[in-house]
Length: 96
Image: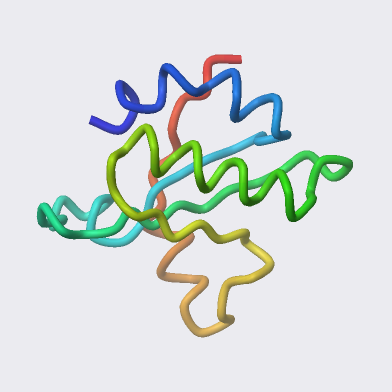
């Protein structure tokens, strides 16, 4: 599902500086319901790590996935939750 849904916006994601994108939480575990949000871990190129790019990526993902997206960066993760999230994250091929 995710790879196919993101394919049309890969260029927008790369233009916003996305270097790596992965899902975690219920989607990664195969437990998502129709009303589940999508938890996404994003890594930006250092020079493109801006609020505007963060918001652009969040909006692009919500449009493509037709679901609410909870977008986070690795440095914003709680030190208590980070090990679990980093263990279960499934990275998406951004084709480039």
